[in-house]
Amino acid sequence: MPFSLASPAQFELIVKKSRFIACVEPIPGREQALARIAQLKDEHPDAAHVCWALLAGGQSAANDDGEPGGTAGRPMLEVLRHQDLQGVMASVVRYFGGIKLGTGGLVRAYTDAVAQALLSAEKILLTKKIQMTCSVPYALEGMVRRELELAQAALLVVSHGSVVTLTLELPENAVPKLTKRLNEAGMGRLAWINSHAMDN
Image (tube, rainbow, N blue to C red; front, top):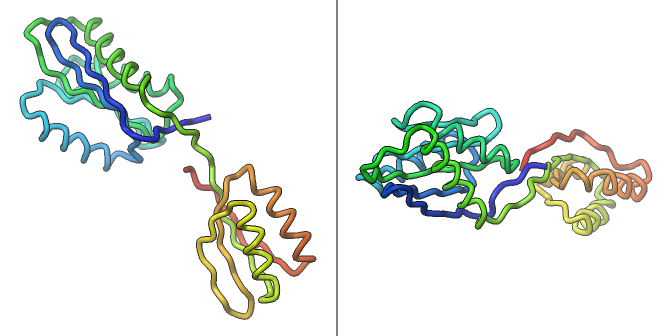
């Protein structure tokens, strides 16, 4: 099951006088990742490299920022993959210490920096959420609202027309139980309009 992070975590590694400042943080997509990298470059104007990797579904990316190809971004991405993370970015700011590390040394340094930062990060399980819409007669609105509260479903939209239409969101694993309870309580007077999955 995929995980994300509750909050950013950092770790600093020194290898042969080079400083590697790693950060792992929840980032939903490429646009936010690029904004965060620009911010890091502003905060560390003297850094030799600001390398990063993003694992976010179809928006995943890896960037070596001038390090030899495949020595920074790709290894960092592999650490995120290995930890089964989603919607997470790893960044490493490198201050060059004057001693070259070679490709193997660079891969190890970037991998270790990110792995160490992840050790102190709090992981949270990503649950798939389902959005559903149902319509009921006015007489059943109170009952539906009570059932949604018991199931800890989020009520997103309520509209009042000839019937009451309610759009709700809840974890995928809670859907069968809630729909069964509502169908029984509604005695055929509750209609389901649609439902679709949302990754959370």
